Image (tube, rainbow, N blue to C red; front, side, top):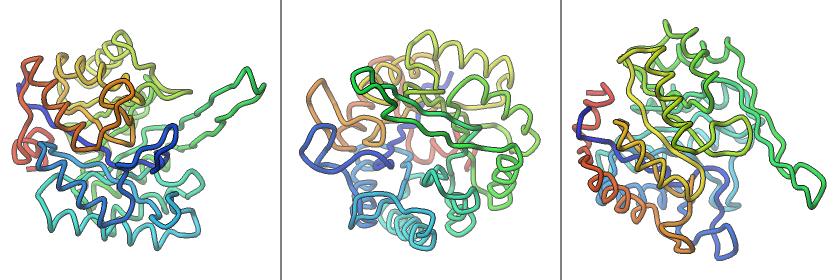
Length: 297
């Protein structure tokens, strides 16, 4: 296990809202300028990877399927502005809006050509049932055909973009195994935990199990990271760092709080992550070291 570890920060996401109400934060960057400036602050704090979503800064929401050109242009503007400010590794999402087609979601890959991009490793169902309301307050599915996954892997490989394979549950490892021939090695697996629905729970036992399953399936031919939804991300970060994760993720996409009831900015979260990985005997990587860890250099 290398003692060096990448600190990734997911600065915006698609759900987090800016404001002072419950479940909101005043620290959320929305416009391309704000996102680029926030990425620079995170780099200065010690982050090596920034994970990017676009947001319509006028409405605070995400761009819909009828706004693909605006969405792609926003990705390019954010990417270029960050590159002007600092050498942090840029990882663009291909998650997109739920109603976008796969080609619309992946368009920024061949237009912007970032160093990395997220790769959805299978279909996902999200659900949350309210007993008090007697109905689902969250009920959605993001479908992903094998042909879509293969096409996405081909686009990323042909454009020299490193896929970060988002693994929401054990079955997605099976999907990646089927499509293994389409990826350059080593794979980068990102274990996404703790969301409601068809997602691995954010518990120590579940993280250990899914990492062990990946080792059984891919041997040593992969690197891995972990993120989790909500305040439990700090527990998963600490455990991941102790287990040998190559990257850990923080940021306002996943969690708003530094401590119970204490809101923090993305840079604050990077600073806390660095303290935590050092407390368990790891050392945050530099950007140059981070590129070597991920086989980008």
